[in-house]
Length: 317
Length: 264
Image (tube, rainbow over all chains, first blue to last red; front, side, top):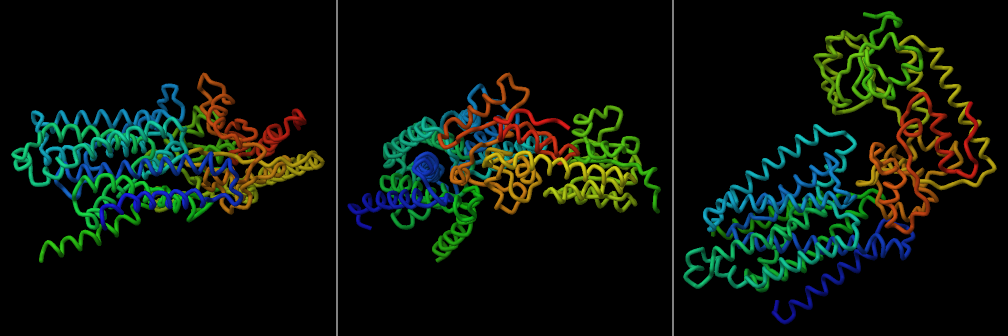
């Protein structure tokens, strides 16, 4: 696609997705109160979370020089999930009411990121393989603790914990949406600022360093910026699978891997994708809702395998 | 080997089943209960076998029961199988609608040889519900939604005995058409069905904040919620021998203008 048409096309896509999402729902007689009070906040939050996850996925794939990286691979999500589930299981509230779970999840994400950087940092260099390995181990640890908690707590809390882990877009207060949006904008801004450096980083650490990239600094800043985005997304909506993997991969196939184009495109397409997926989740079995994370996994798994197979074929030839 | 019913050694693994058994006069036959039954019914001298969904198999066998009664659950299939292999009769109760709950009273009565008590209980529940329904016949019907969990949102559906209690107490369940005892619905559907009152069971009774405040704190952000009241888990939400009391509690919530209904 020609560059000048790309931005209007993607913005149009987001607009159409938002319109469709607002127009469809489970209510038979959608009043203004239902559309503006329940649907709209959910559609906006879905857009922010989708954009955050897809952008974070693209940034981490570049940072770790690994196509399999997604927002949940580094243990940041494990930390968030653990924080959220601890709050749910032990009934911690700090007087925050329904916002206590997101608060503890976000705190968990930040603690996990600091731990990750301290352990895998290797004197600030934070090599990709040690970040990945530490992240995988931390996630495994977090999920063991979570499973332990689900067996130890009162049964009535388990449904909520389960839903949280699968990932679902909820109706939250406007100020929460504002916080998530602000963190998304910050992460996206950082990603775009370092987009060219990420292009060079794809040539390998040494080449990038020779070309004048401060590899250590880029890695550290990108890591913490993505942690903020991932922490915010997981805090409000749990672990929504595959968005951070599929969207960047599909866009890389279509647009190539210039991060100056790829990063903002991921944000827009990720937003449109999750809005539509959540609309499906709200309506397919109405009046019952499916957790959107189950739906994205259902779509994402097969799509990813097809992409992988194409990639492998190309690799072999 | 058939054990005479009066000598049956019973283990109950559900607080509601335990309450029914006690009501039927089977106190002496109970040799073990789950942890919650112990708390709910104050059975300190009856051994506890642990929580509902992971009872201690060794303790259970050690108590040498002839009958184990529990709520039907796929998760406990292995537990039940082990007991059955050892000749223990396992009765799985699966009762959602009012008819099923009343039939379960009959089943429990015959398990412990207290058939006439069970029959009397069923008759009195039916009679009291009918009388209550007659007493609110002339009162305008209140449309209600009962919330059992908020996130995800679980409500009382048409196939639930609580639905029948709502009807007996001069109400109409806005989710009566959903053919499931505990359907999960979207918030949007709840708004769309526009109940006159939302009865919410989700609050922490031990909190320093009153249940009313806890619940209003959650629902106040939705302007379409006309009236919201806390509903304590108990007679109105658990299938025990005091179903009629539950219906009266619902009536107080639905029709506060009528004042306290007369206790029988």
